[in-house]
Image 1 (tube, rainbow, N blue to C red):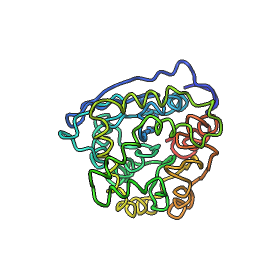
Image 2 (tube, rainbow, N blue to C red):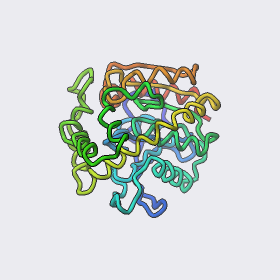
Image 3 (cartoon, helix red, strand yellow):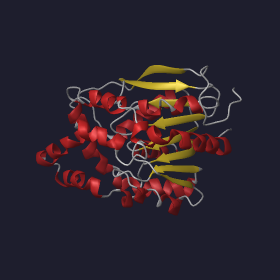
Length: 300
């Protein structure tokens, strides 16, 4: 345990471990840090990144919390089986994350959910609602109000599953789009390390990965009918919730943040002057908010 204040420069003695586990025949990579007997925080990443997005947050939380940050299959360092041999769906991701946590003996945890991590985390919550001790939501949608103009071409693909609409979405894995996700709406682009989009693009450009991403864009449609169940979980369980949202995000705009308060009236909502990958721009603001929230609600 360190006596430093949360949210300031991490103690260099804190070590992040890089591990893999075989879950249902799939190699799942995860980052792990913090005391093994500390309250658990599970960090679930978005598209097109991986647990890499949490690399700066993990040491801040690991002074007190047992942090687990996995990569979904097809992302980061987890396995990337062919899409003809593996079902790239959000339901499958939730099952694999459940399997990982069970293998690690973790039965109680707070979740940080972002982008794709939100439907994965909320599906996990439906499997085991009693295990979720708290939620940290960052640009992760659970309300139809949050699916704005950016989603229109994806919705066309949902409507007919056609090859033409699938091909039209290839722009979403292009290098310009990856860079856009990191730079658009940021309060200070000079804070954003270019290695981010170069790292993500190198993984997107692996042979076969574009088809994986197209499968996931199509499967995202299955999350929308589950929104009422996600919202029922919020209402019935009332997990302590912190919402830290980049309000300039065009992918998951702030329209999707406010509706959480309908079902979680005690949630803390912070709309930040930043974009999609808010941690890259506003870690100095978000880290103390997150650490303080966990200290007040989850340090047990």
